[in-house]
Image (cartoon, rainbow, N blue to C red):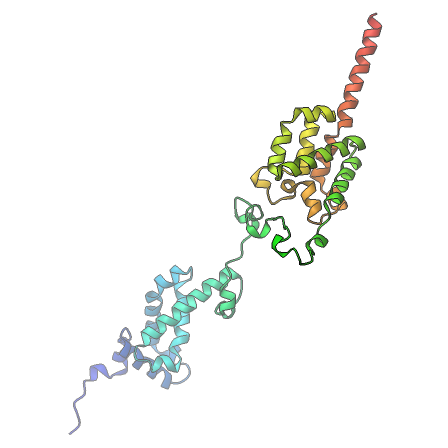
Length: 307
């Protein structure tokens, strides 16, 4: 006598409609596999399965910024594998694979690479690329990679040869180049030398560029001895010591001429800085004195005529 079988659970149509369970999905995948090429296209249950899959993984796809059918496509690729057909819980295998694929898709879109590359750990370790203009504050103004630090020899290694000095211009050469820069921009040679020497002496005494700038900015006695107008004195301090505002700390304007010369920039490079050249040229004391001299001459001639 043949054993009794329940036809409801073994007919192909019934098995296909029960794909929401692990056992029903396993049976449907085996049936589609044995049906041969084109079974996924012709079988109406397969279409229902893919619609159910898209709806099932819709939240997961939305979480990673993908379309639900992209997740269904990833699930379709997994369903055709032998490991899924023979798994104890096919839906668990599919869910795990779809989650990994969605993460790789999101990483690939952010890193501008293929999904295959995004799956590799040495690629996925990087963050998404960013444009400098995407941030309100430019990245170069605060990121440590764009900051400049002063390197000093290690005092504990007194016996070791100091090779750091070979990488930077000497302080005396930087001072001479700074004087030459001011002279080339119509500053009187004696005024440029006396002013630069005075600023360097104050910088050596104080220790930091910001403190030296604040001290010299208020030093009216030094400005009177050097015979420099107020706007020329301010422009000279900003040019030599840099703008003290934190927003300019990592820029050429914030570093100042002396620091830029010490870190390797040459005089020709500074002369190609249009903002620096314009500021120093307009602030040259010769313009100020020339106007004062013309005013004095005109007043003298007018006074002589009145007599």
